[in-house]
Image 1 (cartoon, rainbow, N blue to C red):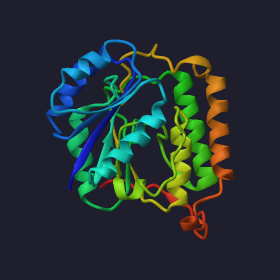
Image 2: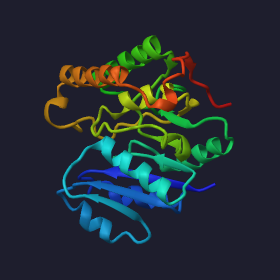
Image 3: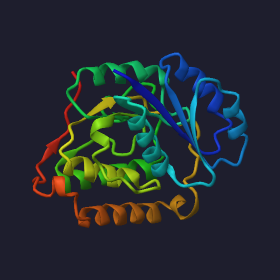
Image 4: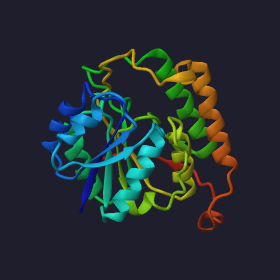
Length: 250
């Protein structure tokens, strides 16, 4: 079973070397998607031997970085792709646990959750992010029957053969809203996996109007509604929107 660990980055000169050093302790196949960084990130990446890279000439968005990574994983015959962020909010030491859960073969999407099993050393989440996360969790359950405790964590393991069935095209931070709708529509098997809640820098911003929580929530809801109204691919048109309760690891 082949795993590709993918790290989307944008202006991460502060964290990139340390995160890559930590990831190398647990994985051999690593992909960094540089989403148009304007700091020293490109230079630092050139010094990293044995790391695959995708470089966007300009900033195209978090979602597009993941979509490009999924395509590369399929082209190169990987079975699973593990995604994590480059801001030290995800612990590379948990990569083997994601791999072990994937090897069980019971699910298609293993999604990290900061709220599934609280840890005594967890950091407090910024109130607006916690509130938006809870609102989206409730919306996904009410509309899709998908019960999640953390709908926005970027620390995931995804079966490549399953993800390639999804017509993903949402380029920005609202990518999860499209992703979850399509997962349910395609009947993918989903579980959550407990991860630490870490906030090294609570002042990190989304950029532009998304720094306003109200505007961010409005954008998320717009993407969610648009995806619900989207005509599904022919292969899934006859599938019912069955209630999908998230499975939990043993």
